[in-house]
Structures are given as structure tokens and as C-alpha cells.
Image 1 (cartoon, rainbow, N blue to C red):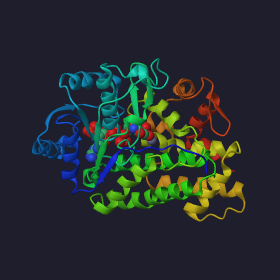
Image 2: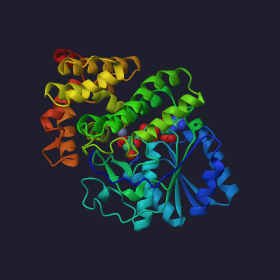
Image 3: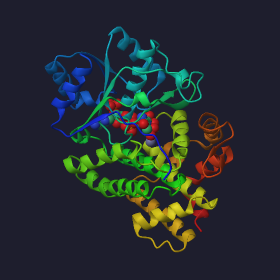
Amino acid sequence: MKDFDLHIQTRLIFGSNKEKTFFETVKNISDNVFVVIGGGSVKRLGYLDRVLQQLQKVGCTYEVFEGIEPNPTTQTITKATQKATNFNTGLILALGGGSVMDASKAIAGLVFAGEDDIWPYVLGGEKVGKLKGCIPVAAIPTTAATASEVTPYAVISNPDTNGKAPIGYPFMRPTVSWLNPEFTYELPPVVTRDGASDIMSHVLENYLLGGNQSPLADRYSEGVLQTVMETLPAVIADPDNYELRSRMLWASNLALNGYQQAGREPSGFILHAMEHAISGFYPGIAHGRGLATLYPAYFRWLWKNDRCRDRLAQLGDRLFGIDNSDISQASLAFITEFENWLKNNSLYQGLSDLGVSDDSFEAIAKYTVTTYGNGKELQAKGSLNQNDIVEIFKLTERAVKAEVTL
Ligand code: NZQ
Ligand code: ZN
């Protein structure tokens, strides 16, 4: 196993009956709470009322900021930060999906710094890595997708520049998070599916590129994949099933808390780099949907370039029982099986189906290598340059994909 350094300071409180523990913990951190929500779903569904009642009950004062958009923008984060600063808050409470949680982390960093513009701090910005701390963040996820309730990352969009890029600091892991599966009962099927795709990507990225030095990281990641692949169709059929929603929510947390890759070689998140660039240019595209679109094309590109075939074949064996005595055939068979799973779960499409024009491929690919690479390429067991990314984008189209199926 490779060396690693992992410090997860987030207290994770799981279960529908755990609100007392969570809100008492919040109160112990600060009694002046700035609550951040998205476009209104948590209000409509009554979750916000429940949270505000609990804050009152434990004796916290609060202010609510509504309006964080999916793919949260730097402009909205600035507005929220100004309000949070004026409110003199001691804790940001995120109630929502990854977008709300990410925005909350950015607000917490800016309040700490006494500033209101997060964009210079994102990857590729002139102040990257320069934040010194953040005020405490507490999170209540309402999607099973990003694991932002435990990760040190926040992903920010800037529609003025078509940009989408992360910030990441160890101190940005929330101090405490309450995972209540009931808050995911009303997720529309499409958001549930997109979330599943995102969860799977978080274990797949390093599984493919990080090598085989940690068999335990492999088994752990396969467990997450297997759980999501089995549970997704079941939860779509039975959306307010507590057990099934619990599995999805916990799988999302496990998929990106750091354990999933501990002991393997660190590697870039290639699917994420490409997808963030795509949804930066097309903010209407959900992160998980973009990833699902890229999976088969990226896998086929790796295969074609004779990269990671052993890892793809191992996944074929472990997830689908494919005989991997011939690595080349087995890895290809895995890709086909995985595509079939995407098709059966309404997650299979080309970029044109998402409204991405091929006229924008070059610009998106350029942004990817500039922001997420060294200006020329990313590293995916070898170079993956701008032309390669354009090729992957083209491979998302079914007709082209059929041509490379050997
Ligand atoms: O805005 P509202 O009204 O809340 O509606 C949201 C939104 O339209 C809705 N929704 C959320 N919870 C709901 C609900 N609808 C019904 N019932 C509920 N319980 O779902 C839509 C999508 O929400 P969003 O937060 O955008 O989705 P998700 O959780 O997938 O987050 C995506 C964002 O997180 C970033 C992505 O890039 C994207 O910007 N990521 C963050 C990561 C991290 N912090 O570590 C890692 C990920 O890889 C990812 O990049
Ligand atoms: Zn993701």
C-alpha cells in the first residue's frame, strides 16, 4: 500500500431520528446561524420549517438565504456572503444538495477572510490555495450524490467566463453533518439517477488510474459500485423506502470521504475535469448526467490506447462475473456491460442529447487542459491532451461509438 494522510474531522450523524443530537451540536458551535438553501425545493417540501423549528428549540437565532442555483455561481455566493457577514454569523448551515453545500463552504471561507469574491480562489485563479480558514459549516444533504457533507471541496461556476472549478482545503470539511434519508424521498427520478452516476464516478476515477496497490480500496470501491447499481432501480420503483434511500445516501458519503482511494497512487479526476468544463459552458447540465455521458467514451478511449485494461477487466470480473483470463476481451466486455447498465437506468446518451454543440468541443477541451492540467494535457496513465478530449467528446455519440466497438 502507498502512504497516505487522511484527517476527516466531520462528525456524521445518520438517521431520521437524530435531529436533537445534530441541532444541539450546532448550538454548541454557534447560536447565530446562517441557513443556506437552493431554489426552494426544501421550502416546498417542509424541510426548511422543520430545521428552523429545531434551531428555535435549541435557542439559535437565524437568517435564511434562498437562491443558490444548481452549479452554484460566484455571483450568488457574493450576495450570500455579504448577508452572512452583516448577520455576524458564527456558522453556515447548508440545507440542500451539493450546490448548496458547496456554496456554503465558499461563503464560510469568505466570511473568515472578510472578503466577498470566491472566484480568484478557484483552481486556475490568482489566489488559489490562499484561503487561511473558514467559519464552521454544518450540512444537511438532500441529495445522494456529491458527498459534499464530508469532502474538503466546493465546486464553483462563473457564467461570465463559462468557468467551473473547485476549491479544496482540509478545513472546509463540514464540522458536523446530519444525513437524514427521508430528506431524499421526494427527489425526482432524474436527480436520483444523476446522483447515482456521480457516486459511482467518485470510486471509479482512482480505481482506474490509481493502480492495484490497495486491494482493500478496490473491494471497498466495488462494494459502493455494487450497492448503487443494485439499489438505483429499486429506489426508482420505491422512492420513499427508508432502507433504500439510506443505502444511497451512505454510499454517496463513502464514495468520496477519502477512504475510497487510501493506499493507492493518487491520480487526477479526469471524468470530473472534463465534466466540470462541460457544465461550466452549459450550466443547465447536471454534474452526474454529464459524467454518465462521458463514462463509456472515456472507458473506450482508455481501452483503445491500451491503458487500464487490467483495471477495467477486474471490474468486469467483480461486478459482472466476466471471465478475465483474456484481459483485452474482458475489459471490452466490461465496457459493454456497463453501457447496458447505463441504458437500463436511463443514463445513456451522447453530448448532443444534452444540447452540447460540437462547435464548442475545442473550447471546452481547451478549458479542461488549461484549468485542470498544465495548459497542454492531463495525466491519465500517460498524456491526455486537448485533441484526445475532443475525441472523447465525439465518442459519446452512439454512431461513432459503434465504430470503435471491436
Ligand atoms: O435548488 P433546489 O430547489 O434545492 O432544487 C435542487 C436542484 O434543482 C433539487 N433538489 C435538491 N434536493 C432535493 C431536490 N429536489 C427535490 N427533493 C430534494 N430533496 O435537485 C437539483 C440538483 O441539486 P444540486 O445540489 O445541484 O445537485 P447535486 O447534489 O448533484 O450537486 C451538484 C453540484 O455539486 C458539485 C457539482 O459539480 C455540482 O456543482 N460537486 C461537488 C463535489 C464536492 N463538493 O465534493 C464533488 C462532486 O464531484 C461535484 O463536482
Ligand atoms: Zn462528482
